Length: 482
Image (cartoon, rainbow, N blue to C red; front, side, top):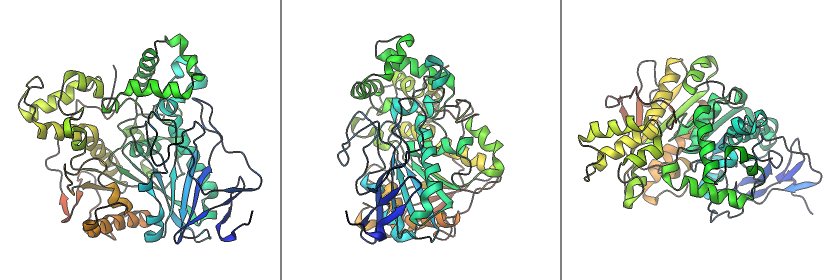
């Protein structure tokens, strides 16, 4: 095999050869861990001899439905992908992106997340990561299978920590600076970022964070995660004493059972990181306050109409019902019900749903409240934090995920080039400097006792959050089982 020396990088594990993506060098499917043992923490990868040709994405984590752009699935999925302007020693800032998908789907090989745009436009080294999902990544079996499985509810988060350790050890060979790592995620990916912010095991592995439509609201206490594990085992027709059968159950049957249990968006809060005393050692907002002198710069926000797409076209969230609220929020359902009835001035039993009030309540209770509480915790600790709201309206408003094309400068509507340029440059500015103000000088950081949010639209503005009302009856943990 002939080697293109300009595409060769020596890592601690061995030699890799990348490929060219236009002017950018790309390296796909690099292992950052051994093939994982089911429900166990990841282990560092073994060294290899020869040259690993990194020209194909690795398989996705097992998930109920195959992805059209990468249908291969395997439990041996712990790989990452790198895009770099040049694999030299220039020490560029590094962006590590964590995909969303409700903790049950997605992959770092999604074409939308091509690192080429940030590499070309921002002189940034970009890494996208696969991590274990669903029951394989976030099912807490510690109280059932014993101490050896204490961290099973955090396998997906521990995968990401292992990926960050690999990046610290190897990214300089790809032209990146291990001292300038920004982690970024959207939706469940942002909730993983929230878990990393809350984990003492991740300390020092990254230096800035961007959270888009997600924060720390999916971190749950073991009382909730344990009951959910028992519920999943029960859905298989097993007792907790038979839980060890999960260790050998074929992955296809495991994914079928997971799909049947989660069903649809009603199961959006069934998975997430766990306060296991090791990976995460205390409730998230308390943890942020305790680590106030070590908090990295933060950029955090939501879209204006997060849940509009979930309600459109007769979607499963189209009407509030007791069953829907119980499925989505568990013991927190009463607080969400009261919020809707207060705002709409009608009961959930009434046939005529106030869709505007329902969408506003879901957006607040699923996304906005957690983002603002996190920004408040940051600003109270004296740490740098910038808050935004994406307001550019599509067919159904500024819905969940609509900002991604603008942030990535990829697949956005051709008539929106100006807005896409501005938002993309704001993210580049933050990745380089810890501040988005090079692109938006008018964007104020949050201050203790005064939160302000930049509204990202064709005409930007500052929201003083005067319409925001926190709900003391609603905990930061979106789903609880008491």
